[in-house]
Structures are given as C-alpha cells and as structure tokens.
Image (cartoon, rainbow, N blue to C red):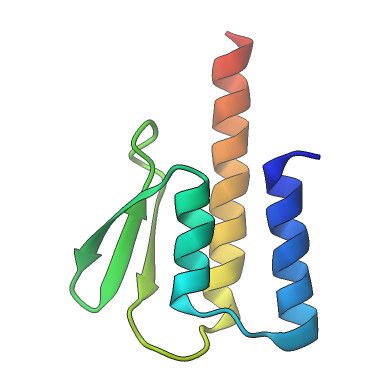
Length: 90
C-alpha cells in the first residue's frame, strides 16, 4: 500500500471520527513526504525541495485546525505523487 493511500485513510479517519487534527499533525504529514518548513509570520510555510511550487501554509494556532488545512494537504500530496510518478516514468 503506498504512502498516499495510508495518509488519505488516516485523514479520513481523523475527519470522520474525531476531527482532531492539530498543526503538529499536519507538520508530521508534510515532513513525512519530504516537505521542508520555514516560519512565515502567523503561519508555517511548507515547501517541497524538489518541487518548490508545491507550497502550503498552516497556522501556528494551537488547538484544532479547520478541515480546509487537511483537505489542502491531501490535495497537495496528490499533486506531489503525480509529479514523482511523472519523473520516474521519464
């Protein structure tokens, strides 16, 4: 089973069962897929070193994140998977 499928499954479980994603959970998700981070004011900025246009921001706020941050992360990881597959096919 590939990592994106596992990440999506975990996100769905979290979204439907407890809706309890915090900034640190999203950080672990991005870092697990090779993203790096830097501070950007009130947000953390995550970017992929091989695909610098793949970027996301996540609030520093403690507590639960709005679900939009989770869906954005999954969309971005889907784009990453497509790019990596394209490079492997070359």
